[in-house]
Structures are given as structure tokens and as C-alpha cells.
Image 1 (cartoon, one colour):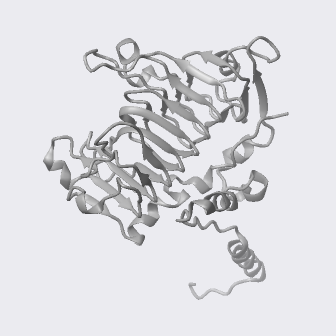
Image 2 (cartoon, one colour):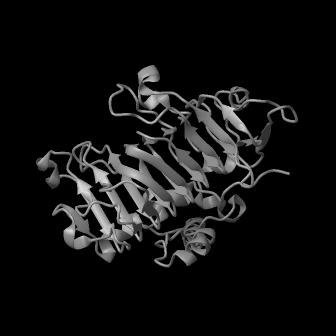
Image 3 (tube, helix red, strand yellow):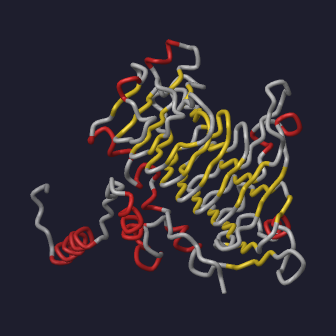
Length: 362
């Protein structure tokens, strides 16, 4: 204070400010439990509906969720549209309301793109009869990142109960441009629940922005998760070889955190990560690793100088493939304190934008 007398109105205003600060909701992002059976209760305790936590969410998200629009897509009639693309085209540019595109069962052979100027879109399938979103695009035809069956460039996207597949043939090692992406996520604040993301080389382009994957199954062969995203993968099964995170500087606050997943498959000597760029950051916590994992665990991509710039970490992983004693020297076995930032929803700023998984409208 500067020594001046505080008048009555000023005292009242000050008291009101203190009251607001004292009673404003405080979000504490508790770490993901080590016990997998407690994860669902932990998630539901933090990620509640909008009405119960509106003041802690992004204001534009709260506004968008007030009156959601529902569009039904059904093959053979019964919906407003018979393709997903037509439904997306009906959403106006600059959209400011949640649009739930409810997709009926069947196989939709479409190359689907949600452009940056169409935020707040949800693609929702029925968990009992999940729709197949499939296309056979390859890098030779479209370039790698644009070969994806589903491309999401807008913010606040949600995908739930979907099979997202690139059906291009498995690369034989000879064909040029055989990379075939199933999903590219380039928007910020994007979530995927109970989705299967399937391809071979370069299955998932986790491109940029904050992303959250829960109860998803991701399958591929080489570099099957790649990009520069900041993403938390919770309770997912992964079949394939190598996560190629593309961070190029330790100053970039990006990276992939995998928690309570399982790494399995039929391949041998699978690497957990490859130093595709100079400073990748990838951490596995509470992950069950089958014996398919290479004893060294990680690859410097034949560039030994990158051993000084990568951030590869493991925390309390289990299984025959989790062998700290045989890991490369540049791999970190994380302490509790080191692991905690990768075990909270705040890693992807999730308490500001994550909502419970959507349900199929009646």
C-alpha cells in the first residue's frame, strides 16, 4: 500500500476480490493411478460434464457446448446425409457450436478432411457397431501427411467409437511412396475415445497441438506414431514398431506420454522410439511390454550424437520387454518426481478442455 486511506467502497471492492479468489474453483490435476483398475474412477472424478466445471474450461468451449447440433449419417437412408463428407460440408466456416455427427454402422470409403475453420466437430459411432472409416491413400498419390483417411485440422475435435483404417497394401520395402496414414491430427485440443487406428507404415500422424487418446487401439509397422504433437495416450494397445517424435529442440514443449498401455505383436526387436529428429521426447509409464521389445529399447537412428539430445524415459513398466539393465545409456529410468509431469492431464492442458466421452444420441 502507498499510505493512502482506503475508503469504504474500496474496502468492499477489495473484500469482494479476496472472496472471489478464495472461492474460485481450483483444479489440481492428480497423477494417473499406478493401479490400472482405478484409472476410470480417477478420470471420471476429474473430467466431469460442462455444468459441473464450466468456470475451469475454455470459455469458447463452454459456449459451444450449450446447444449442440446433431447430424445423423446413415447408409441407405434414415439420416440427413449418407456420407460423412457431406455432413462435414454442411457445417459452416467459423462454426462456434458443437456439431455431433452421429455415424451409423457400415463401411465409409471416404477421404475425410475437417478444415481448420470448422472447430467443435465430433465424429461419433456406436460402440456396439462401430463404423469403418477407410481409404487407401498413399504417399505416392498424396504425400505422406495428406495420405490420411481422416485428417482433422480444426480445434476441439472429438472422435469416439470409430475404426479409422488406411487399407493400402502393406509396403514390401521396394515400393517408393508406400507410406499410408490412417489418421492425421493437426488441430489443438483434440480427443479420441475408443477408436481403432489401423495401418502399416506411418499409421498415425500426431502432427501438432495438444491431444488425448483413451482406450484406443493403434496398429502399424514402421514409425507408426510420428509427428510433433504434445499427446497423452491412456490405456491403449499398440502393435508395431517405433514412435518417431519430431521435436527438434529441447526448448519445444512437446512429446508423447504413454500410460497403462501394452506393446504387443508378432514382430521381433521392436524399438520404443527412434530419433527421427534431433530432440524427440517420449515417455512410457506403467506400460506392459511384451518380449518383442528390443533389449536396448530405443534407437538413436544411427546418429550417436543424438544420444545427448533425446529424452527417452521409462517409469515402472512391466513385462518381459521391460528390461532397464539392457537399455541404451541415453534412456532414463525416471524417478517419481521426473515422471509426474507426464502422468497428469495438465501435460496436455486437459483440465481446460477435456470432456467426458460423448454418448450416442437417442
